[in-house]
Length: 114
Image: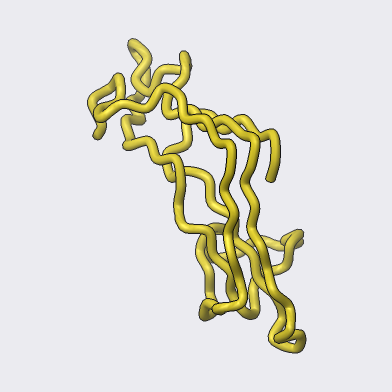
C-alpha cells in the first residue's frame, strides 16, 4: 500500500495476507509507505441530535500472514468478519512501514474515548 490517506480509523490499518498450503515456498512482504493516517477528522463521532459512535482511534493492527487464507475477492457472504483469520499464521512473512505521517491523534478523542 502506498500513497494512502486513512481517516477516522477505529481499528486502524491492517494488511492481511495469506497463501495456499500447496505453495509453501511463497514468502510475503506487506508494505505500507508514503501515507497519512488521521486519528480524527471534521466528521464528528457524536454529532448533535444523532446517535453517538464514540470509539478509540488506532493507527495500526498487526500485519499478518496466514496459511489457507480466504479468497482475495470474496464472492459469497461469509459468517465471519473479513478481518478475522481462520487459519494458523506463518513465519514466511515480513512487514515494512516507512514514511508514515500521523495526524490528529490525542490521548482522548473529541467525544471522550481514550
